[in-house]
Length: 503
Image (cartoon, rainbow, N blue to C red):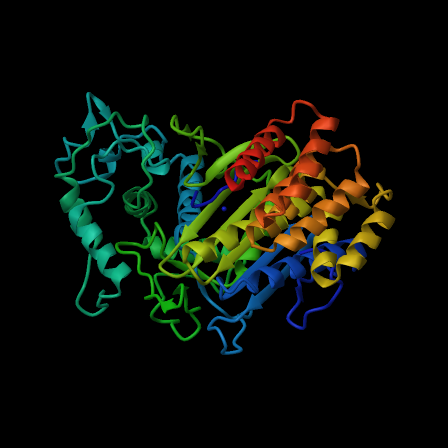
């Protein structure tokens, strides 16, 4: 599966006091699902120890089972773990709600995807076309308007104030009237529908169009939609009203300002709790055959640059070999990074939010989402033995070796990929845990003595440590098993050059 990103451990069987299990029609307790969520807990608790992220909020829905939990502290050292009342800025995930309202209006015959947007704008907008091709509803939905600049000057100025924390709610303002006025002077320098350029103007214009066709304020439409989804603790453009419950966020150690999305907030102005976001995820999966859900999640445009497929403001839509159809969206405010992944064909979804937007924290967010949680959920109800091994190793390496040897033959309960085990060794190496990395690779060569790649990896771990003698032994063993192992040949040459230099 292509990872949706800004780009984006193991079986410690312990329980967390903050563990939340949603009651889905009195769901029976499934030990396998408990084991999966214990692994999730262990991964999250372990990655928090890196010190980059303040706190994580996680929700997983799979085959009718829901799991929600929180890790870390909103403010480091304050012992204030997030909870079910904590409100998060979901930023651009707001766009998916806007897109869904458009999908409903399309199905109702009130809007056509091929409508020239000038049909809904009062005044002269002769500039909103390129070589006879007008900007259409579809182009607003897929970030392919063809504009020279992503934002108008006024919109950009307001966003800069928000980002720098200088926005004043009492005196600063940018309304739909301001946007429509500036829109008369924008330049369309590319054919609409040909170039992907992520922007916030499209969703705000869609909100204006929705007001016109539905004859109802956009905020009212959104609030009604939230309630239809069971999201009674989700709000549009009300950060100031609910600021006491709003999760503070950081960039590194610096507290970042509250986000604000000008105009309607259609591009990124919603705030929500983890339980409400979990309800959204569950609704989309349980009601995957509902007409508006299918319409809102279908592909409308493929970005020619990276082949990413876009729908009604959903992104990274595709079909994966194991998971089937999936779609996703990330959201990044000044201080919150969030993501939602929906896999309707395999009946699962994942939500992950972190209240720190430093590069390091976002990298941890990506690792927790894509490296740790998602692969386990894909294979469920089988448990990932690689994940079990990793968590056991952090607790007690001897226990990890013993359990792996005992469990690896139980192919009914467990599965594992050799590359995942190998990657764990490299994770340790990247974390400067050189000796632990060597121990893992040594264990793997003992368990899989005919695997040349494990010997090659062991050689690299020895090389990083500066133990060239053992590195040579490992690389030569790798070549004995696979004479075409290029990395082993390259490292042997490096070692020989180092020895010659020293002599």
